[in-house]
Image 1 (cartoon, rainbow, N blue to C red):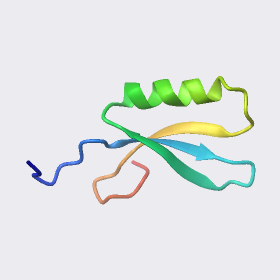
Image 2: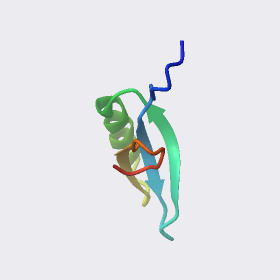
Image 3: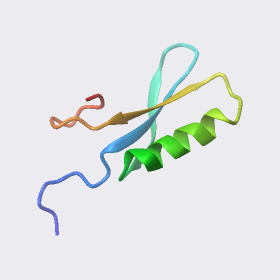
Image 4: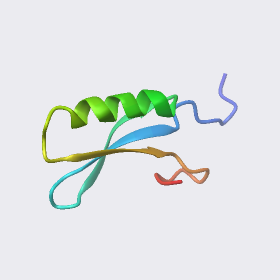
Length: 62
């Protein structure tokens, strides 16, 4: 059953010290994605974790 809708529109994004950005996970809800981003932040690394929603045209930020 694929009607063209995105089922996992929320990404956790990792940004390293050099500004490089990587998708580290996809989630169905913002709350799920935020929970993972927060838990990764709690590990105490210097990387920045954020949550972004997949845009309608397939890009990362919305």
